[in-house]
Image 1 (cartoon, rainbow, N blue to C red):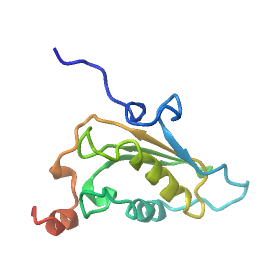
Image 2 (image 1 turned 90 degrees about the horizontal axis):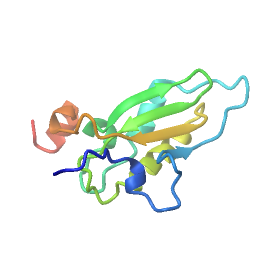
Image 3 (image 1 turned 90 degrees about the vertical axis):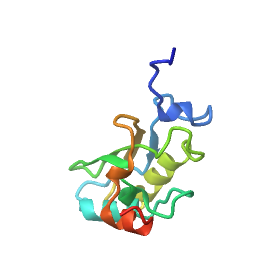
Image 4 (image 1 turned 45 degrees about the vertical axis):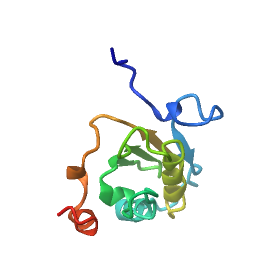
Length: 134
């Protein structure tokens, strides 16, 4: 019988990973700092690519949640195309690091989620055309 255990990023990360399994980057913003716009964070997400697919993770539909708080904190819920993705333990940190580089972003927290499972229907029209899935 299949286990009902839900995989988390912790299942794919080295033993030195945080105990809660979340990838983190950045630091609190200084008081009065102008907070980044959602569009700037999305542009940063588009710089991260799945190494096996020539499309960025945002257009692939791997970002399930993007929450920007008034103090510059960013929370991201993301998935992967498959739980056995070879970079499962690294990609969430790539995402956290990329977003933390945006001016006006403070602390970044990335959680890996599996529900709902990713499917090609989540891809943008541009991604489908690039992969000839349109």
